[in-house]
Image (cartoon, rainbow, N blue to C red; front, side, top):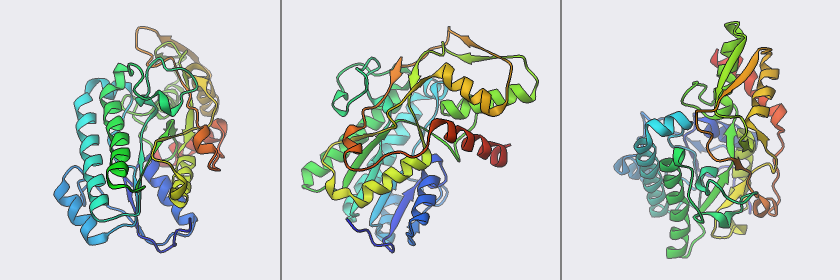
Length: 314
């Protein structure tokens, strides 16, 4: 499906990890009419503001990359915040996109929506077949509600406006590198870098290091998103996993990051702290069959992310 380069494209959450990657990729592909708003300019948790924005701008395509995200600590200490904010943003943007007839909206779920002890690799149909990980339950419930809303809108109104993608753990540029309230790769980069600068001979990391995770570079997710926009008519009314098909243990990840950072001290593990799900590897066959594949290896992505951290965060 051809998408005109002058189409009005609204990227919600344009300053974040995924949103900024979307802006970069859209501009590289020649799209000239990209609409953005900061939180100060547009509070997506307030429908009155969202409605006015959509009525005035009438975006044709919407990438809903806005929302509240955080690591295990953040989800454990502020679960209601993640539930309330994400559901409010989803509901408001979905309703406005439908009311003002956006052609397509791309929504993003999370791999935490799947059962904690799900069969591996995780297929889309495993959703709601078991108990989800309690440390991210509130956030996961909000994302499940968003996926259900996409399907419900499409079914009720006989449309294919809403597309739900479920990328695995994102990392890359413009991430939050806070040690306690960030994604695992960003948190590890910060902790290991600090240990190196402070000359510490040992660093203690959360958990056992044995859980396996799949990681996806932010620009690959952005590329997959634009692919979905340009091929929207080929998508069925279901959510699609987006991943690399490979995983590693958190210990292996920490060792890779230590190598990139140049930290030569000892890494030990606080096994009293929770691990989360033992393994999360998505089966992305359905999305891959449409003709998309990631292009960034974990090793390359870690190096680029660390370079960004040094140049833009420190």
